[in-house]
Image (cartoon, rainbow, N blue to C red; front, side):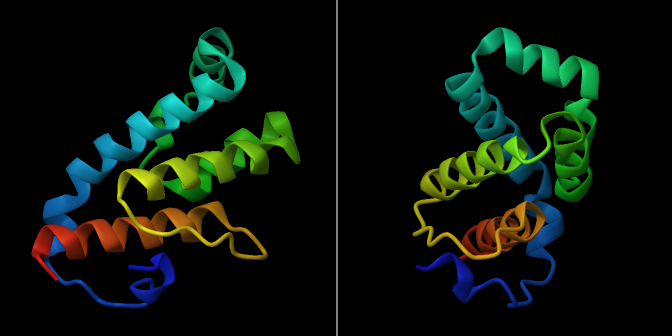
Length: 119
């Protein structure tokens, strides 16, 4: 399944049921990707200083906070996070241009919910 096939699809009540599981998946993916790219200490620093753990479920705020410190470098980390997330969901990831972290995470959330629903 290609990620962008379901981006606009309505998945109904499955979204609410899957949100907690998706949040856990996203949190783990963010930690793994950041630690791989910038190391454990820098990841802990970013999470502590920017309070990123409070904004994982709001990808636009997560992006805003990350970008406030890393400027254009945030996009590099975000692309890696999205790539890792899509790999974990076993869906193809064709990098969209222009890249928008929030839209990509929302697409992944919808796909996750649809799979949980059995579509």
